[in-house]
Length: 465
Length: 104
Image (cartoon, rainbow over all chains, first blue to last red; front, side, top):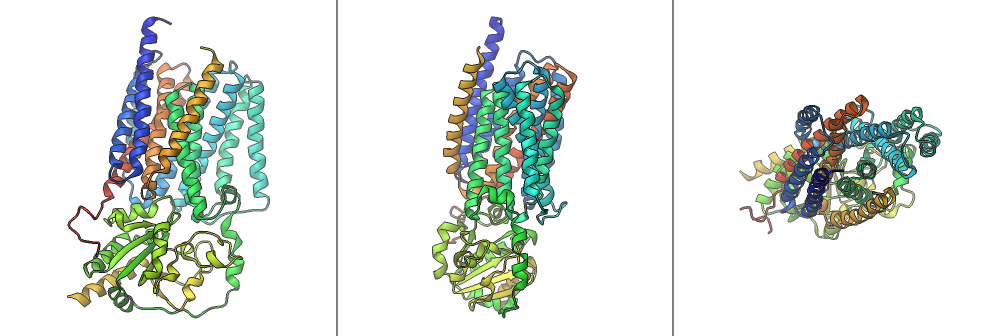
């Protein structure tokens, strides 16, 4: 190695070091909405530095193809950055797939370039990289398809499903082991990838829409870990750091999500939640409920001092967030204190509700996390539930036979009056009956969330002027 | 350099970076979990550096083709990820500095 090469290598490594520091700051600044945008700038500068540094790499002979790739990637990336806020969960799943695709392709190319001259350790990491990467590619595509409703959202289960999945994973690992022993067996490698891809599909098939927040977080973690493994293979410290940061982010979010559902990872991945309860819900006889009209709801709301709105996935489906903002404005003008209670798993990905409400221009200090707001429900005049179901189900506190028993919920039933906007009495996605609807202090507001909130807003306006 | 010392170095870096990630991300407000995910996604696309080297070195047709697709996939994540994170964060506004007296 000549002095000149070593010199440029040192420059590249220093640039990577700066990029790593910027990445860490980028995440650190995400701790608060006031500094978060600095975080993006830090990330962007770090990324730009890293890419420019890489172009100094002495082995690079073909810059044209790189440039074309970067331009094409930008052309694909811009529309992905411009999707509607309601489509953010599927966009996120899709980008996990792209990230994992990159890692899997690079890993595969490295295998064919180096085989058979690969050390045992290197081959183990490389196998880990492409197996994790492969299953994340198809798993994330499946998740994106379910979220976009191209694929059925209902969990699909069949007998022996878990057995088939485990057998597939075992096959992939067996191939990995034989490749570690004999890295020259190039013909085995494609099978390992194919099995990983198939495993990703089968892993997501039994997962229902309500479990998507956990699954997206988990796939995020896998994408990070596979990138870190790629860092080991390429001996790139920057990649190891970025992968470890992304991996820990995915892991933390998965832990928060599964805690918020009182379920373990294995239960989410292998439990097929939706199937459990359908029979039990069908056995319930019709119980009386009290319902109210938009006029009555508007009268109760305008007479209240404190209102807490509980948004859920139904609000996102009905695109009701802008009407909710009008309701917020109307009530705030009348001096009503309106806050929003955000359950960690409300919606289809971590933080989904916050983004939708922020998009509708509701100030973020009005959005309160479950643990902070739960104590305030007994002093609340009206809890207005819009498109949320399981996260308000009091059975989770009391009914040990309920499949969601033990899941932390928003204590809306403790408010003086509970109003629930719901299309019909059909049980929610998971098919679990909600005793909240039959309480004496509960009023059911039947209708489409957007239309119903719109009528309440009109009533409020009409009564005023 | 001998590869086992490389390995040990890499493991140290991985474990320490994991700790930093854990401590930093634990402090991220749940309010921002969605933009956090799109940001880490963009940062994770730093894998593009590996793909760029593959394409640039052009050691075999296969590695160049795989690398080329990988560059496209990762770049789209970088561009799309930073772009949407920025759009989301711009939407988060506080009521306090605004003229609206909300606290009653």
